[in-house]
Amino acid sequence: GALVYQYPRRTICKSGTSMRMECQAVGFQATSVAWYRQSPQKTFELIALSTVNSAIKYEQNFTQEKFPISHPNLSFSSMTVLNAYLEDRGLYLCGAAPGTEVFFGKGTRLTVV
Amino acid sequence: GQQVQQSPASLVLQEGENAELQCNFSSTATQLQWFYQRPGGSLVSLLYNPSGTKHTGRLTSTTVTKERRSSLHISSSQITDSGTYFCAMEVNTGNYKYVFGAGTRLKVIA
Image (cartoon, rainbow over all chains, first blue to last red):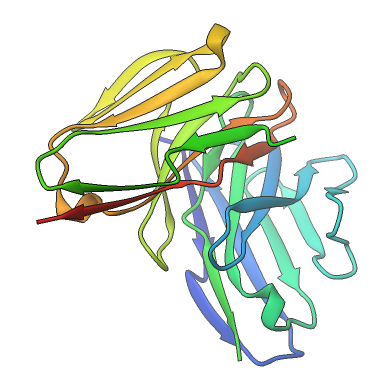
C-alpha cells in the first residue's frame, strides 16, 4: 500500500536555530508534495506545494527564505524551518500525491525553546 | 470565505452513544478525507471518501458531492475516541492542495 513517513516525529530546537524535516513516500511515486503547518490550537494551513520538475509554489505568509523545500525525486521531500522562533512551533504535515488521492504522513511536531 | 466548515465545533458524549460530525464545503470536492488527532498527537487518516458511503470499523462516512457535504458517523463511542476530527478537501481538481476544516473536538465520558 501507499504510505508516507515523516521524520523526525518530534523535535526540539533552540530559538534562532534551524530544523530540517523529511517526508518519504513508500509504495508510490510522489509527483506532488504539499507541506502544511498546524499551529497550537489551530487547523492545518498550506505552506507550499512542490511538483517535481516545476517551481515550488508558496502560499501567502510563507516564503522560500523561511521554509526552503527540496523535492529531488519521486519518493522524497524535505523542508527546513530556518531561524525558528516560538511562532513556528506546531505540527508540520506532508501530503504526497501520485495522481488523484493524496496520502498524508503523521507529521513532525516542532517545539521551539 | 471559509471553504470547509465543520460542525459542531465541539461535542460531549457518554460512552456508547453515537456521534454525527458534519462537514460542508463551498465548492465541489473531488477529494475528501477525514482525519483524527489526539490532543498533542499526530494526524491519522481515517477515511478517504470523495463520494458515496464508506465504512471502517465503527466509522461510516457519507459524502453527497452535489450537496457539498460529508458526514462522519461514529457508532458506540468509546473514551478513546476523544480527540479532534478534521475534514479536508482538495481545493481545485488536480492541484493536490487540501483545505482543512477547523475540526470537531469530541469528548467521550464514562
